[in-house]
Length: 417
Ligand SMILES: *Cc1c(COP(=O)(O)O)cnc(C)c1O
Image (cartoon, rainbow, N blue to C red; front, side):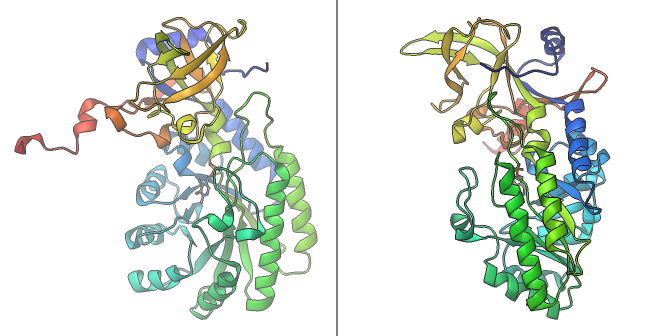
């Protein structure tokens, strides 16, 4: 079976765990930077190209700072995400505010920061006017193609999804904001998540370009950008392959050249807002085997749990596992690798073929860099782990400390008991 490589060695991790006890998340700076550069380079044909990193995937300001240095903006959907961006110095139109069911105070902060506001619903035009007194000069709408596009398991079918405008509402909405004096326009969609088929993204852009042209003809507005959303998948399984970004870029470039020619929108900017493919493959959850249990099945109990990475428990998602020092050992055992929650779906792996695991072995769970730490929670009184950064020079920096019991109790006042 195929193997996944790690950016660190067993002895490096053994040193790290002396200082930072397991479990923790560790991110590979070099991997993140190389990947970010490849993306920017692949799309350099589009003069306005920008990736707005979906902050929810890995909301750590030190990671965001690295991405800022590589030219990324941020895609935010809540007040704390906006503030995180602001703290990192990502402000103005380097923020895309793609939210839904948004409260007025979040729109207010987004407007104050000069973020690009991407409305999820036609009624929010009036909602912003009522609550903030005016519309921004630049507005974008999120399109939900409904039955015109197939979704996938993580995001669901577009017609079942709560997000976005219908096609009819787009035409109506752009007419309304044009009349109300909005000057600059964008169009957004997000129709898939963790999609590995590169043609899917090319087709998404084709759909957006067709719409841009149609709306331009009917409403008489010029678009400044399209935002094709995030959703580029990553190979969680060793036999899967990464999305070929060059192929996607070439396909989109062709569409831009052929479809926009003569439209007056030849300089349309291309935006995307990926989260998963930006940090996912470059983050690892490092945990330790602390128990072995043999009943009807064989279990390995580790010191991390679903609170550190909930994707396997929530979606049955596959995350590859490496037992440090046993990379080349024969996988002659079948285990469930489990955490300590009083929840039977707290399993990182089910019936996984692995080498013989001994108590004390360090276990690395791959592709935990996006929607990993970020989805953490405190159920069962479990505390969130630390986040570490493996820097390009091989040193390690703690970029978020582990939670303590004091943090867990911080919102309680015991004095009135
Ligand atoms: C979650 C989300 C993203 C990022 O999705 P990935 O699958 O992590 O790339 C981008 N845009 C919006 C609006 C999202 O909700």
